[in-house]
Each structure stands twice: as C-alpha cells, then as structure tokens.
Image 1 (cartoon, one colour):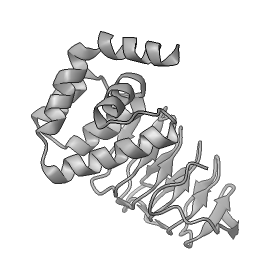
Image 2 (cartoon, one colour; image 1 turned 60 degrees about the vertical axis):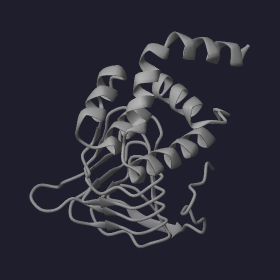
Image 3 (spheres, helix red, strand yellow; image 1 turned 135 degrees about the vertical axis):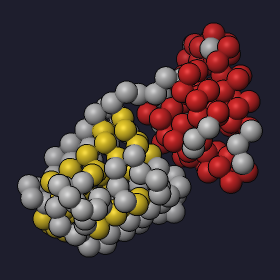
Length: 205
C-alpha cells in the first residue's frame, strides 16, 4: 500500500519532477556529485528505500521541504536554482546563509532554523529551531566536521565548535568547544567526551 501511494504521488507530481530533474542534470559534474551523495544520505537516514537517484529526488523534493532548501543551496546562483525554487517552493523558515558548507549535511526538521556560519565542515547534522550566527559585531562561528547541533541550540559569535562534537538541546554556545565533546546548558559547558566519530558517513543514530 505504501509503495502504491508513493508511486501515485510521484506520477501526480511529474509535471514538476521531470523539469526539476532535468535542470539538475545540467549542473557541473562536481555539484551533481555532491548533490547525489547527499541524496544517498537523506534517503538512508529517512529510510525511504529508493534505489535510484531519480526516485530519491522525486520523493525528497516532493515530501521533504528541508531537502528542497539544501538542493537549491547546492545548485548555487543562476537559472537552475530559480527553476527549482519555482517548482519546489523552499521552506520559508529555514535559512542557509553560509557560503562554505562541506558535503553530507543533514537537516532534521528545518523549522525556524538559521544557518549563518563562517564555515561548516562535512557530515554535520542540524535540528529544528537552531541558530548559528553572529553575536553583535564580528565573525560568525566555524563548525567542524561531524558536528551535531540539536533542537533549539544557539551557536553564536566568533567561536569554533570542534570536530565530532554534540551541542545539546537549547544550549547556548558562546565559547569554543573542543573536538570530541558533548556540550549542554546556558551558557554551554562540556560535560563529557563524545567517542562516536560521525565523519565520514554520518551516523543515523
């Protein structure tokens, strides 16, 4: 029954899936490779069980607004991005305002989320109602590889969150967080070491 509903939804949305997919194929090879790698990641984490990139694109773009924002960000400026935004309106409360984001980013529930870092590494996971941004004047944060920032957390100012760190729910981070740390609280403090390496190939756990 589930597969029949999925097929029906795809057929019903072919009028926008086909031109969207076609425009994606026009992107430079490097951009396509990055987008396809993230498709694989999102397909796996969300347990969508698609076996082709076309199937992944169809289901993710139709049903997952957060993914739309990410693909449109990866497409860069130009006609492809504009067409994708027209065909698949982005989530209005998810803002990706970071020029330098590494591969395999996953955004879980993008509602009311601002991503405005100086740089974000690979294999990061960002939850809903997260704010990554400036604290008054100065630079935005640098987020390392394999970092998980959970719901409601704030990461503010010219600070660095080290590789493989976890920022707990509703934490407010205004100072550097060392690599392999779990930080919680207001203001955030390191409470223990994080032994699980999240990069390369982000964990779904």
